Image (tube, rainbow over all chains, first blue to last red; front, side):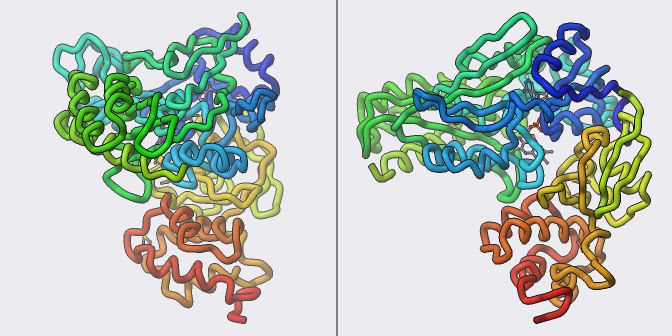
Length: 327
Length: 161
Ligand SMILES: Cc1cc2nc3c(=O)[nH]c(=O)nc-3n(C[C@H](O)[C@H](O)[C@H](O)COP(=O)(O)OP(=O)(O)OC[C@H]3O[C@@H](n4cnc5c(N)ncnc54)[C@H](O)[C@@H]3O)c2cc1C
Ligand code: FES
Ligand code: FES
């Protein structure tokens, strides 16, 4: 099936791109690698008037080490280039693991960091061909007032299925959003909203330009669980960052991905592990907080009970990996 | 632009092609340039049979990228591997190691394999698995394909050295 007709624009500088966004109405769709956008255009989930390619904007490219030791990652940098980056590989192997967990080499050769962070939420009922959706009827995201995933839900509960956000949130990464009005920088965790339709705080005239990772010597672990080994969206992911070594930590940041509409912080679990240590007692106490921390879950892609059990399993495995890491 | 001409270099030859924003790179290769080696499978990034190599020799999915994005770029397709009547080493290895059955996936699998070899002429197990994770073969599976990739280095200009 051909793509829906649109106006294709490929600016050569950020200023040029932001000017397009200033003048254009909301029917503009940003294009990073296009691996999600083109897919969604084929399924007619996205029918933009204008597609704005970010690939030729030099300001959005590359990895730089800033004077204070932070790393700046340009939003249009390809995941393949992040996986190959020597600085990232040396300082943040678990982050590289998260980037490498995305799809296949083929997809990562095209996909960008910004596209992964802004990846549209996904739902079993919505991410289907148009024929399939037409048979079922539209939902909140596709123009009606019903949710097929949770009957009576007032908001869209589609999942954030991207692999890199949990790991980047765990290392306290910030994102910079630029528009013709200026620039703002916010923690990545505040970028996401619990709404499957407007799942980020990005305004229609804004572009995510860069991600900044503050320097840290903390330990970082990332795990992804999938049905298939080769290439698959995750059932669940976890990223944990901790100071200290062995079974001791005074600060823990635990983030779960792919189970909820926005990546979920497990702060109570983190407090229990700090109090009790990373031994088996601490892990048991942390796992006991999962049900409350996750709250009500959908059955999208896997049953809710499975999701809770998966969260506990990921937490257990990740803590064991963390405490066994060489100091 | 909704319609326009792009310059696309395919297998070393520059083409001016009239495309619209409705076309992907795959549509241009098959529909406009009549290069039918590159196959159309899922068109959603899941099967890899549409794989071509970009100017850096990396595997990319031609079904998942708008044609207009490729203005001024170069790609290599399966038709471009043979040189002066000589199959590329990886092609001959696919024949010798029986890595082909129905052949539908083969162009995509070979372009994926070529991309692995472009990165390293002596790929390890991890490199090969990483390079093949995005392509699916319904008939042969990946075992013979992996064998062919491991032995591609034994060939010089299409012949076993
Ligand atoms: C077969 C297949 C398997 C996949 N498996 C996985 C997987 O395992 N894990 C995973 O995380 N993803 C997966 N994906 C989804 C997708 O390929 C990746 O998330 C990828 O990183 C998206 O990046 P992109 O640059 O191609 O995004 P695009 O498709 O270009 O864009 C995605 C979204 O982000 C927006 N956007 C892009 N760049 C910016 C920017 N700089 N500022 C603001 N908005 C922006 C776009 O408008 C769009 O809404 C898979 C896709 C396919 C086709
Ligand atoms: S046709 Fe492109 S990945 Fe299947
Ligand atoms: S040889 Fe038939 S699909 Fe691979």
